[in-house]
Image (cartoon, rainbow, N blue to C red):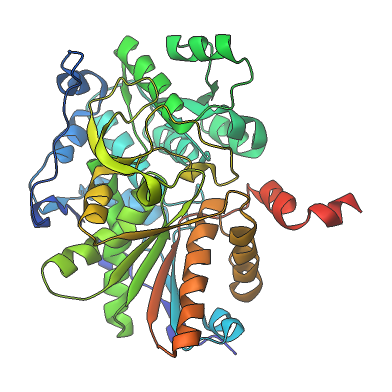
Length: 440
């Protein structure tokens, strides 16, 4: 089946959003606010000393539409936004499904290979405007660290990155990318923070986790006044910056004359999923459309599937304010997987609330990741897309939904997001798909 010209829905630079969408005013009730821990200390007030002031204002804003500064908007356009929405006819034919499959390509055209650049640019822009010297952060799969290193280089800032040790050791190419853009990269747990030293004393080979890396980044920001902490997921302002994905998608659907029946994406902390679906969820809440929303997760960290909806810390050391989230527990030890970006103990408060209200549902796939990498193989061989391991979960859930449509005969419109490419993750493909061939 030959792809048709109308199967690639593109927007002009003039159609790129001029505002970020803030869903908070459209929720049925107020989002449960952060709380200080019962042990004492004003953790919420402490955020003023470690976070970017403009991002903190956005975190608690009740404005539905927040303007994107013209200077920042021009940077977004220079790095390839808007990004395409594409019909997957070859995948439809392979699956023999009556469903129509569309994919939002955050991997395509991104200079760092993923959606993470959307908030990295915003946070670096506001930090530079405020006169800070640099940003410090955590990273799991490495895509957020890559994006922030790139963004800080563009705005002449320093960048310190605490990278989950397992992924740090596994991905030298990604580490080189961060260093190319002047990123100072430390395997986490690291010997340069108190949190890291304590963990390394107990286990010198500790594989690390995203919540541990967050603890290290927060500690670094507290003792380096010239730095501010930049988070790649979970918080409201991060999801806000990512809504340019969903806003583009809705306009592309309008131009293509389609109405999605279900929107699917992978979820660890929630920035990719939230950015893709929140604008559509806002319309569902207002009664303007009907649509389902499905988050694809790993059983290594099934926070929306097996977590409890309660207050918990966002980091392993328990140094953040308490956030109401679906959580497995901030000190939970999670098995290592190749989709490291999904290995986080809790889901973003906004996504957790929507899950609690039954607006979002979730599915979790096996820790061995065989079925998700097989889905990635199918996507590569039908549509020529090489997804990051995290995005393979999105492809798996979309394929499963399309197969259900084959059984039921439903002609659903299925939208799914590929949040990043897998060009720096090919060792994972080798391990999951070609191990036997490599042995021979």
